[in-house]
Image 1 (spheres, one colour):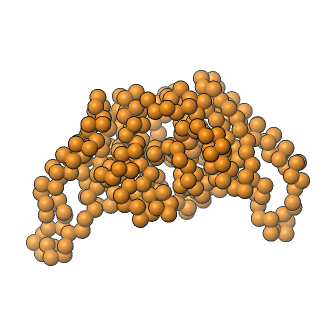
Image 2: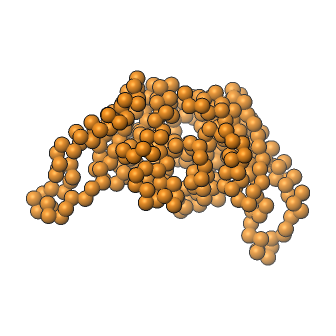
Image 3: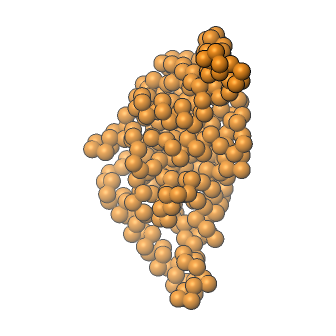
Length: 303
């Protein structure tokens, strides 16, 4: 069992942010961890250069925001009722929400998991993930469970029960993509879920073969599928003993194939490494992981 002592739930009390709270509670229960509800206070919520902006008294401002935060925390707790986990409330200050969250993670030292939604108060749907979530994922050193709305959820909205029946594990044969295996095995084990290990072969067929009707690398190399599956079994299967595992080899862009498979097979959660061998997006946190979260139809667990 992964040693997770504290689960962090950052919130700005928006409806979208609060949507991930049930997940935070369930993860805290699953790992027998303390749940920390964190609200980040920033001094300037609006543009200080705006003529209508008035610099507030710092003491008064912080007191007002802290009072609102306490009310927000209590409303979240009251809405959920008896949660069955130890809850700690924290209010921190910073120059930006993500900076304050990251500083808290660093200072606290033993945050084992962060649970948050892809958008909060800003609701910038055109932004890849929402700047706060994007930066936390980019710089935090702990696993993060990312949710968004709407999506296929693994928590029953009526009963609050967790139903994880199908887990998708993208694997690109890099050492980094194996990082989530410990979490994958534990979550699959306690939930009795089926795990599908998926690899996408993104190789272009030379145009010279088009005339003969060959436009797929799997057509060009009929034994490729068998070899890839064998390699996945050798490298992943041995680490997932006791878990029901399937293997899928697809062709094309990994992000598209992962999204399609998750949608078609009603995957409950995608568990994957933050960065793999295709690291052209390392300026973010791994291009494949970033785009999977953007397009996913279910929660994504990033390690």
